Length: 287
Image (tube, rainbow, N blue to C red; front, side, top):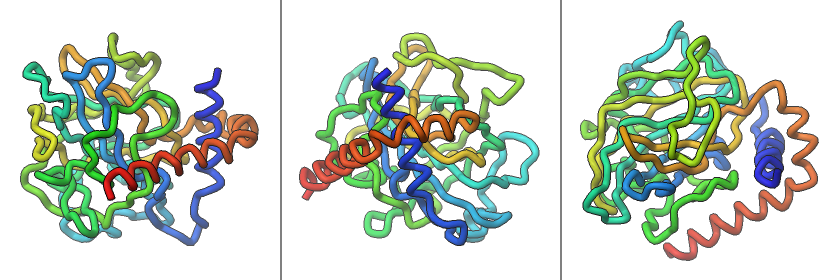
């Protein structure tokens, strides 16, 4: 029950914090990264993420010609239109240093809100204003590269938020995504042993081998398009026999948004303050 209330508060915060209709921009509260290493540390990795609010019929031209040319739609109809675009990039960091660390080949997302389309931008990665490309040696995270931070717990709060990308940059080391599954009428669920249950959608990407804390194999940015505002909910990194989970942005369940808003308002300030304290702690630890 407590976890449901926390997620409800996150929905309320998301709705109240959205920019005005005149703004097309990154949502800083839903941009950053989550380090996943539980329940199986051998499937650990980082999911970098950012949510973009759209206000016109073509968001792809906001990021330049190279990005537009790189887009591969994995679902029909290919128009890529929606109010929000959710971007994800996986880095297989192997921060636990285990000799048995696994390759990763899929990312599961909680299936709550309506996803209109999905795809990826081939050999495009997040670009940070100072560090540059996210994924290669020395910059595995969108935000602070603090590898001493413990793995995420499923509480509606990511490892880090508040760092927005400066668009995208071409990087030939970024691997492709092969398919996207879970849209109706297809039904898939989170994998057994992941610590998460329920309906999911899934990106299947070319396997990325385990790396190190400073240099790791990584995917190109993947995305889903939706009219639903973001919340934090479960995501799972997976290969054939191991999983690690954590909180990442996903489209909110549209039919229940107003009900969740009413439920979450009493805890809105508490949840926001908790996230701010967590982000501040990370910043101080890396200063």
